[in-house]
Structures are given as structure tokens and as C-alpha cells.
Length: 115
Length: 111
Image (cartoon, each protein chain N blue to C red):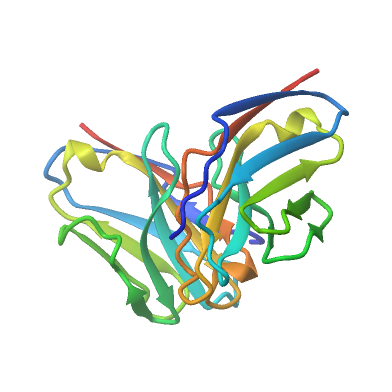
């Protein structure tokens, strides 16, 4: 497709469960970013990849959060032992190369609700 | 990242120009100024960015003050589709992959 695709668009899970959120970036974009947006707030940086490696994961809240991008294209954000405070919209973005001066293209996000 | 200050909300009428202000008094020489907007239930959308000179593209214009302590996003003719939250963001030239979003300005466009 032409844009960044995120699946699922909505996910409801029980506290303590494991979830995976998927991001398909624009074809050919080498840089991929994950952000999290809580209600009424702007998006917060979580992690970014240049190619296959996580170049900066300083925004991940704790070790329950992990992300991979094994082949330098699709990325998966994994959350273990989910908590109610993890409820948010998780946004993925990609850019042709590393750096915000290329302009990020965001997906529509995955709305995660932990009950 | 240097901080930006934007009004919480603004209102405009359809087909009129809109000037969205942003203050960034602590901007450093290598900081770029970015604007994104977010429509309801969508991810943010890139609008425009610049360093020192004014910039124009098909979506908007960015006017940057001479001292770079403020900037203005200009929508030349607002449409209902422009109703969104507009974010003004600074990125450090050295590590400009990490955008720090604030709360932005909620723009309402009246028909």
C-alpha cells in the first residue's frame, strides 16, 4: 500500500496478557519509529530502527516493552504482562532515511485497551 | 529538546487564512522547526519544516522570525478538512530523529 499500515487497529486485552502490535512501513523506507499517545497528550517517542537494528530504545517505559524489525521492513512492538496504564494509541512512522528532515509518515495507530 | 509554546486552541472561518503561532525562545542554532497536524482518529501528518528561511509547500507556509524565537504556520485558505491539532516541534540537528510533541493547538474551522 501507499502508506504505513498498522494492525490491528484496535486491541482489547486482559491485564497480565501478552500483546503484539504490527507495523508495515512504506516500502523502501529504512527508518522506522514507534510512538505512544495517551488521551489528550501528544505522541511520545518509544524507539526507532535504522534498518534491522534498534538504534535508540530510550523511550521504552520498562523491560516489559520490546520491539523487533528482523528483516529491516515490518516491525513488531511486543508488550509483556500488560497493565492498565499501557492503554494508549501506539503509532508507527517511517521515513526514507534516518532523520526528521525527511518528514515522517505515520500510520493510523493501534488503540490498545487493557482491562 | 528545546520547548515550544502554542495556544491551546484557535478558531477560524472557512476560506479565510489562518496563522498558527509558536514560540520557541530557547531554540539553538541547529534546531529545525517542524509542523505536524493530527486529524481525529488518525496519526500525525507532516506539514512543513524549516531552519532559518521561510518555506512554502502545497499545504502551508512557514514564516520564521529573524531571531528564530518564534514561527507561524500559515494556512492560506482554511477548509473544514484543516480542523485538527497542530503541533510545532523542534528537533536537534544532531539527533533529529526524535520528535518531542507537546499538546499542540486545536484548530476549529467554522463553515
